[in-house]
Amino acid sequence: MDLNQRFEDYIAADQKIEAKDWMPDDYRKTLIRQISQHAHSEIIGMLPEGNWITRAPSLQRKAILLAKVQDEAGHGLYLYSAAETLGAQRDDLMDALIEGRAKYSSIFNYPTLTWADMGAIGWLVDGAAIMNQVPLCKCSYGPYARAMVRVCKEESFHQRQGFQIMLNLCEGTDEQREMAQDSLNRWWWPSLMMFGPNDESSTHNEQSMRWKIKRFSNDELRQRFVDMTIPQVELLGLTVPDKDLKWNQSTGHYEMGAIDWQEFFNVIAGNGPCNKERIAARKKAHRDGQWVRQAASAYAEKMRTKVTPNQTNAA
Amino acid sequence: MSSESSKWPLWEVFVRSRQGLSHKHVGSLHASDATMAIANARDVYTRRQEGVSIWVLPAEAISASSPADKDILFDPANDKVYRHPTFYTLPDEVKNM
Image (cartoon, rainbow over all chains, first blue to last red; front, top):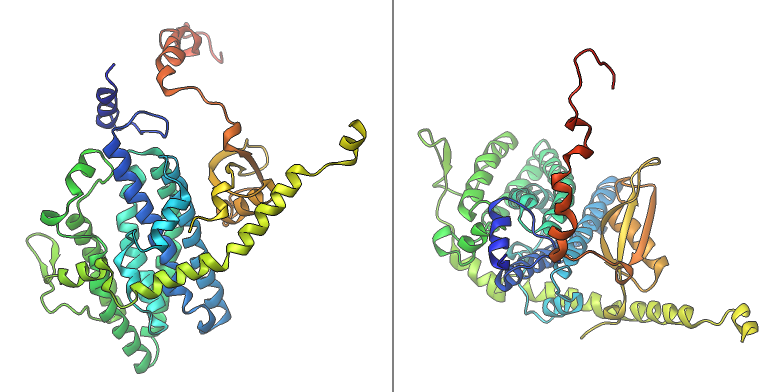
């Protein structure tokens, strides 16, 4: 049977494509691009939160934040591994990231100015990520789908711990409530941008939907996120920084104001508040770890070539 | 900028979720040797009590059937329904078989 026809039949029948199966080059390239960007986002995503580990307000908060950041590292690894099943090389992906050639989620180029940002990130950023990732558990590529199942299980703790931080602040003093509101003001729009450009201007939407890599469009997922989150905002007693936001009784959805796409594309292009800082931090970590990797390699080599007493006797 | 870890072999990781169950493939990672592979597999794949035992083995040590042979290998089982107990109809009087 024609290989391409077999591939199309698999996709049509909702069968998973596995690593060794034949697949069109563009399908492979699209997946490597998407999975590696996703992996980079997890790794760079550790930095804004890492900023607050030493300043967490209690030992418990510190332990929770550490566990969350460690999860993000794990998510990065699952995803790099999934990209490697497609023939990508880990080091090429890493090089592309630290040389500034690779993309990652624009949200991580914003600074974390207050403790409330740990709440807003967990609640909104991880919340938006879950919205994006749950459908990816059914993605047509098996290794990616399986990685996403693991990721989604763990993200749910991230979102809840973030919401709890916000809730505690909102139940606190005026100053703490203001801190929570300020954080929401800064993270709201970047969180909505996480779903990517509007459907009519998204370059990858259509093909990815046909291949069942994506199951829902950017705008659909963004709408779901807003519909789900606004009641939570109200529960906290906060308001989103969108004067055009209103409930539409007839559609059963919230209508949101226009997103500043200029800002989004500007951050993607490398000109966000923290792009350079993020890459520099990643580069430094990579460089500082060099001697450890070298030592591990040297040790492994030594053990491989070690002559045991028995071998000497035999010779 | 390439690093030494590029020379590190890829290890496939298998985890036994609890006593009495077999080890199951959970993913893969790079490590310089088996000791590091187990240590990293513990951190990456068992942060939430997912397992009580870990196996790692070099990915290159695995031999696999080819996807191209799928039909030849597995289709013949299709027409051998008599291998399943449901193929056989029993009189209603026969209980517990």
